[in-house]
Length: 232
Ligand SMILES: C[S@@+](CC[C@H](N)C(=O)[O-])C[C@H]1O[C@@H](n2cnc3c(N)ncnc32)[C@H](O)[C@@H]1O
Image 1: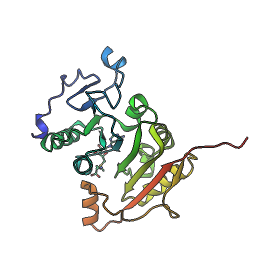
Image 2: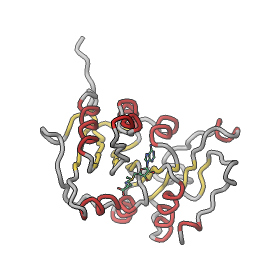
Image 3: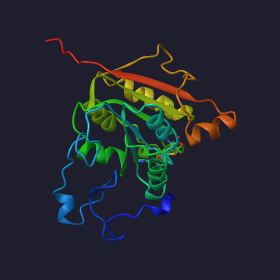
């Protein structure tokens, strides 16, 4: 199957929110299907149809990393989240060509789809590999890793669930650490300086290969969800 073989169930301009062929199309509320759409849950037959652990990768791009995970770790249900349809259909073609029944893709914006659809305490691990760095200071507000998004990640993770963040952008990694270190619900699994520069057996993404080839340094951050207790 080629990426262009993926035909969405609607005409462009008339899109709505629906799940078809392991793709969750999430769109602004154009019609009443969207307004009333409720995510049916990970174990629904249109999603995974079983109760294996769920791991999500946000900003999946062409899906190299997550397709490899789904192939080599079939006892996990993998979810790719990518906002661009042109990229998402490349993930879909990998799913088809490798018969990855444990890979489900969401076409939508990471924060929005998490807040609207992902059930609380339902995910064991979250990954964000090379999110867009928005390097200019005036664009930093567009970065995905912000307190509101991390609060949503805290909500969807199961107890002791983890989030891994990978970036080649030093400045963005500092923002990531600031956001996570100031969230009492997370602790860093790495001691100060709170990142490492390689992670054995992590797998490769398109951007990871590109930046390593260019000799760029890469930072891996790993945080775990912890119970928040308040002193009275
Ligand atoms: C730099 S690429 C990295 C792709 C892949 N993770 C890799 O390492 O090769 C960032 C990807 O994130 C997607 N993206 C950026 N912001 C997003 C958001 N808020 N929600 C969903 N996807 C997003 C972009 O469309 C792009 O495909």
